[in-house]
Image (tube, rainbow, N blue to C red; front, side):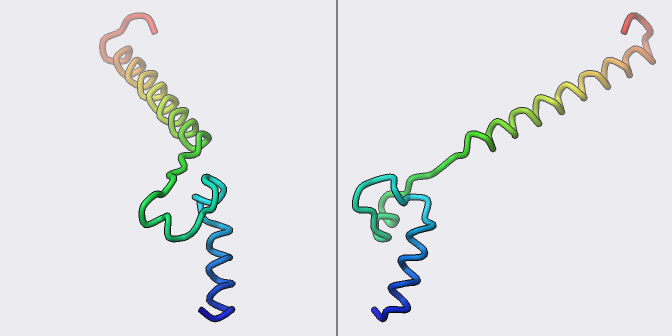
Length: 73
């Protein structure tokens, strides 16, 4: 491999999600073992958004029911 190709591979490995997950990491390991990273903050953001949407839907449904059927809000 020429030095340009080698440098490109090194750059790719530096940015790879498997880097620093196991000793002696090499690109070939990804064909057999890939550490999937799930970012906790992304999961939390998604859960909070879903919760907020559910809350908004419940409030809207309660208001709509109050308009049609009366009763306490």
